[in-house]
Image (cartoon, rainbow, N blue to C red):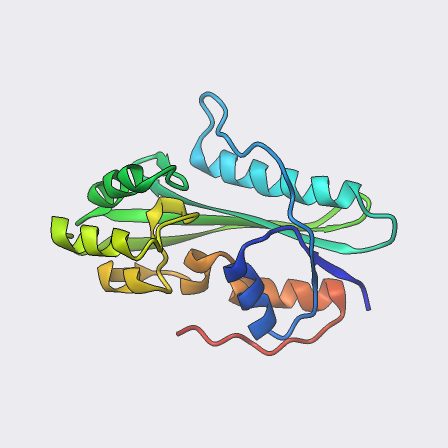
Length: 198
């Protein structure tokens, strides 16, 4: 059985992998995740996931499978990253109110030292209801927006913001686990249970 390493400190990704039945170690990658000039969201998210995987793979002394991912929220080609503070989170939620945005997660599996086994980018379309100032203020009071792309967590209180979801829910949480499981089984040799989409 090959050791699986998750190159992320995200509690959401860890929970998805655990629920799918996989054992893994956690070794987050530390790198600059700023977009480059003229970089499209699709190129950006794929590059960051790849850089995370190779950064962690570089540190390994023994054979391992590295799983890395990056998730971004995109509204009209603008990347809405993790808000720096409450005010920025408020502005993001105002932008998303009543509109359809995309959630892109690019994931990659690498076998050390540097063999790419698979990389894919999954897109989910989310349409928000119209959000009143009061609704946004109440959400910000929960502090749930912290460290969340687009300033919201769909598995938390923000589920009430959602009008329509087109695509994978787990992709929005941080990993399109339904798509990922077959590749993990093949790469790691561990047979997890299929994670049901709620």
